[in-house]
Image (cartoon, rainbow, N blue to C red; front, top):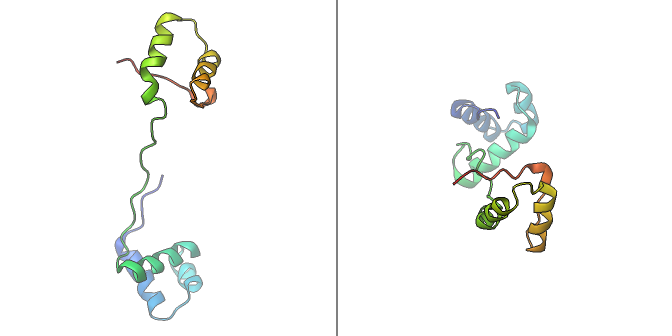
Length: 107
């Protein structure tokens, strides 16, 4: 993932748009995507800031509430396959995919 462009560059782009230049011409001049110029100018008009928003984030751990059940099943049946575990979770109303990998870290 790339890092956000500098605040200085964002400010120059927004100021050019506020001065009357089109988003398309400003984007071409500064070598950025037109959509970025549009979003930054909209953000500036709405909030008065050109600061980048938070990037990335954390994925919700779907299986965490079912950790004890999964660990118990693995302890009782060490040769349990992911497909079998997936079927057992589905029987409990938990829909998961075996392709995503369901590695459960040791406690």
